[in-house]
Image 1 (cartoon, rainbow, N blue to C red):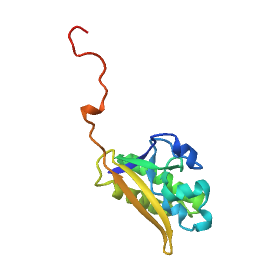
Image 2 (cartoon, rainbow, N blue to C red):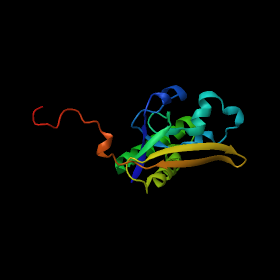
Image 3 (cartoon, rainbow, N blue to C red):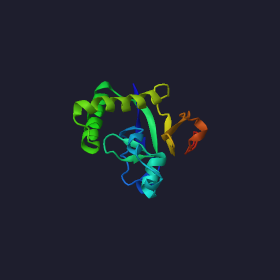
Image 4 (cartoon, helix red, strand yellow):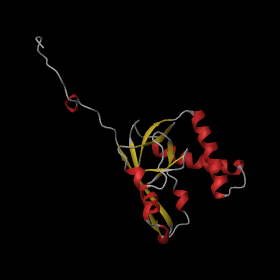
Length: 161
């Protein structure tokens, strides 16, 4: 099964999110966080998290870009438990058991986004508020094969060098 991990190309996420996700942590869309939001909630760093932030399932911070990679069944199960506990602690789910199904649904949704993607495919998310609620759209950026012309070659090819 495939999921996605947080990836950082520069330090920008450290500046645009209240709580940035850790590089390499497993991520999901996390759109549920915004289900009761209105335009009044969309200011500053909260707006940035809403507009294009994936949710890290370890720190519950946000990241702009994730990369598809394989997840092991034991890791998936641990993520489900962590996310279910988050639903109990932050959103008031009545029990870990009650939250477990919803946590699995969130993880499976992410797995569905990743399932037909090659490893290292980059994903971005975009959200907007509509009359019907939060609308999410996703962009997949395929990994590029690196050609030899993309690498600098140093030294000499002469036998004398």
